[in-house]
Image (cartoon, rainbow, N blue to C red; front, side):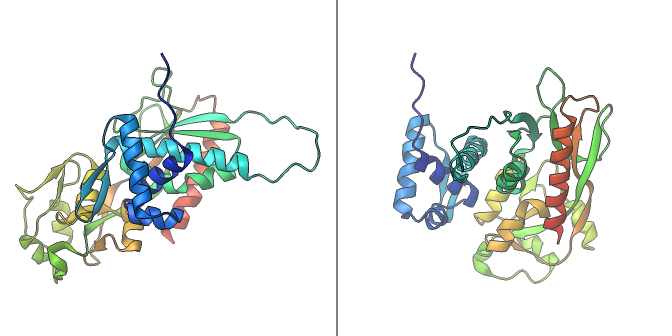
Length: 304
């Protein structure tokens, strides 16, 4: 049976940009296209795949979980093509054989892959052309053994996992965020104003510890939208559905471009942090060490 035809390169570029920027308009600006052209590319891709890739909202678009995972793979493929065709012409006709890149399979939480790691991947590929980094977004805890074929993982947790080596990359700060358009732009003056807000809840990120850090005698909200997926939680906040507790690393770009606003300067240092984790007996230790050094540099740069 013939396989599904590959989409045109420009369609993949439009799709990747729309997912990364969460806007057809901003994707069009970046690619020097019209907003209608980007929409047409997305419709063609959705028709090819037989499923929607974005949820249309009155303030923009929100990529589905499948679209986020697909965009990561598309971004890696586009980076490979850019490197292949962007190198300067050879100075002689002699062909020099180069070793094939060594594949390093990385497990990472989907929201961290989409919002922190994904936009930086091109820099890793440029710095380490001999390592083909295969990113696998997943909420499951990779075993890092021959059964799941995962070489290394980015984990958010306490930092110690039996039988594994780990390197701390960065701490995390948690604080409330909302769309500037939330409540029609009416300013929230003090943290106690949250009593009048819709608080977006997450299974693994309760509000009560932040209430305590802010000196509030409030209890965990019993109602309001509830999420198990961090990306969906933050997308809802960007769409103006309410106020969310956010990790700093996941909203840096959205705070910078105005899609989200931080509410007050009260932050809470989380007990968990971001770590790179691997098996000490891995046969890919040189590649893992290269990834560790690169991630540490990126984490330091982001903290400045």
